[in-house]
Structures are given as C-alpha cells and as structure tokens.
Image (cartoon, rainbow, N blue to C red; front, side, top):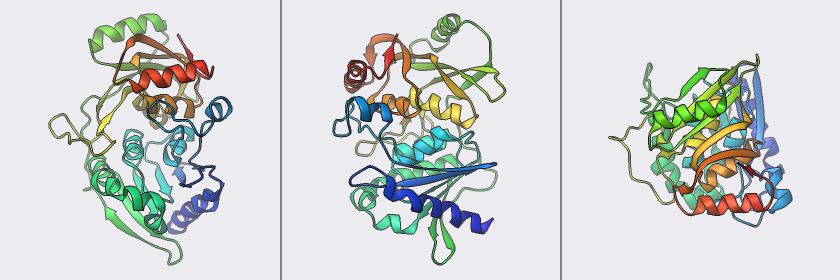
Length: 305
C-alpha cells in the first residue's frame, strides 16, 4: 500500500512535462477502487481547434486543471485519492470536495514551483480550509525519501455538512416534464438538471443548485479571497456529482436554468460535452458567462438550445 502511494505520485511526475501549458505544467493521478489514471493541465480539444490557446473564454482561462481533468475522466471518484505535482487552487479543491475525494497528496517540489510562489497564499488561505471542512486529508510526499507528512487531517467519523444535498433519482420520465418539476421545486434558485447513466445503463436525474462548498453552510460561509469564492456553481457541481457516483452525463439532456459562468462552460467542454439547454438566456451570475457562451457558440463548439 505504501509503495503504491509513491508510484501514483511518480506517475504524475513522469508526465508533467507533456502538459502543453507554456508556463505552469501540472499533472495529477487519481486512484480509486480498481483504477488509476493520470492527466495534465491542458485545453479541451474543441477549444484548441476552434479558438486556440491564447484567448480567454469570458474571464476564464481555457484550460482544464489536472486535478479536475482526472475527476472528469475517472469511472467513480467517491473515496478516491488524488496525487498532484503542485498545490491545488481553491477551484480544484472545491471540485475535489464535491467529487468525494478522500485524500490529497502533493509532491514536495511543487511548493517551490511557479504557481505556489505566485498564488501560494490562495492555497494557504482557501484550499487548505476547504479541504479541512470537506474532510479531505492533505499530505506532502517526499518521493526520494519514501515518506510523507500530513499537513491537514479530519477527525475520524467526521461527516461534513452539505447545505443543499443533490437530488439523484432513477427515472425514465420525459426530460421536459422533469425540467418543469425542477422549476417548481427550485423556485427562483439557479439550478442544473441532468440525465446520466450508470455502467449498467440505468438512467438517473441529477438536480443541483448552487451552494456553499461541502463543509460550509450559509452561516459559516467565508468571504471570497482574491478571485476565488467558497460558493459552488450548479453546472460544475452537477459534473462533479456525476463523477462521484460513477454516472455519465447525457449531453442531450442537460439543462441550466440560467447562463452558466465562464469557468463552468470550460469545465463542460473538459467533460467532453458539447450541448446544453438554457432556460433564461438573460439571467447569469455576471457578464462573463454570456460572453463566454457567445464565444463558444460562434466557434461552433457548443450547441445551445
């Protein structure tokens, strides 16, 4: 078991230079029951082919971070561990919390690299706190010495609070009826409804709204730091919930009640989905979502109904 920890970390280190990012090359390995896979930070192929790597998508970079790429590629993430070459940003830590990641291992050399030097305060101020609240144990791995240090751990038996639990139900109902029902249930709350299939072919609906990242509640919510927020937006949340439960989202049955944020749309393409239905095209969290949506529509890499 101990040797596998270092092997998983080494697998990420071995591929980090294959990242196409010119400045911040990052790699991660996710390991769960019966599987392990590694990914680097990169641009979704659709963005590379139609827009390129030099253009922002709204106010978001067009890249999928290595940790999130692992989650979106894994068969099931509940209880899995992630091994990463660099300290994760708060957005990736929120994704890990929503995806049910149980443990995080960071290569010790990552703390001397570019992102940690530029934005290490975000890791200290937000990422570690998010992990603590979500019950994700954080370790630093020293590969050469074959040892690790625990820098954050949760109390045995700790169960993080979830203010707005996702609603996941097996269903064969008509999607338009499910959307109508979701609007009544969610009232004026922004939400995402998705249909997804498990490996046995059973169909499930996933209904989520925005909420404080796992472990936080509205009463314990902290103020955002720099560009990062402690709030989890609905579309990214739905993608992580699907990964957590081993469900594959059906692009033809994916609905957002409002225009998603720019980062959510990039994550959508990172999940290799190219279609979404949007209820109110005039509603969005900020002006960057509609701008990103227009870019992707004009590039013909996202179909919007």
